[in-house]
Length: 305
Ligand code: GLN
Image (cartoon, rainbow, N blue to C red; front, side):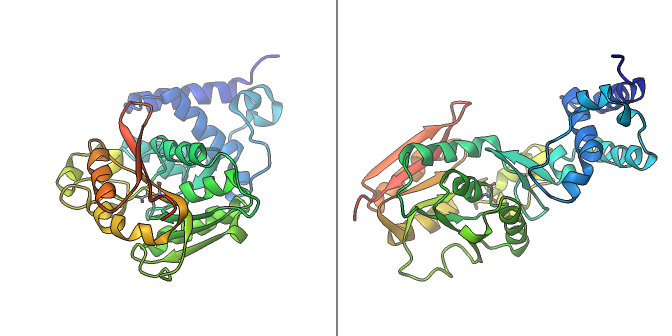
């Protein structure tokens, strides 16, 4: 079968434009723009999961796809202009893939990153079997909800609490819970860390990817982070460790016996966090590296207390 030249040529055109604007993975991004803003636009707008995704290759070979409406060309052009100005593709599309799902993001949420998937793996290793009564999770600084909702996906009988200080982030996290069919198993709370938790709450697993960038380094971050991730999700104070300092003392109180805390952290921070944890009475502290070999997750246990 001959490919419909219309779409094949259009794909080549978008690819060339992106390349010209210095986009590194122009081929992939051109494909994603066409698939997400056109072929699957209705599916995405309806925010429904479950319908199969249409691919560019299929469309190139199918008769129905030969004609690209002007409104779609305009939409894709606008996306390219934003991309040319350094805006990340995920911000333009309004979602990013994380672990096994697609998560909506908003200006109030951090863009989920592959490094954070290491945290999910760490939890799975420590809790390979879900007890019949399920686990209780707490996510401090839930953002888009990507960590907590991915965990609930892995542990289908468990319940999670997600805390964030930003109402905008919580709105996004709730929308993600809805999309993923998890709403009945999650509660999102607007709070400055644990302030609004009742003192006797207990969790088997506490996860957090807190803001950990030293504030003097924020100006030097890559543009896609500095200009597009919310500052509240990045700024960890003078040395980036303020959130850990603030949290570590109180987490023991909220851990169920044999529970674990899983912290994501930045380059060079893991040992310092491990020291803080030991000082606070932790009986076991482990560090897991990410795929680049950077110490990325600190795992803390206070035993059966
Ligand atoms: N928990 C969210 C994430 O990992 C948000 C983290 C943050 O805003 N610092 O993406």
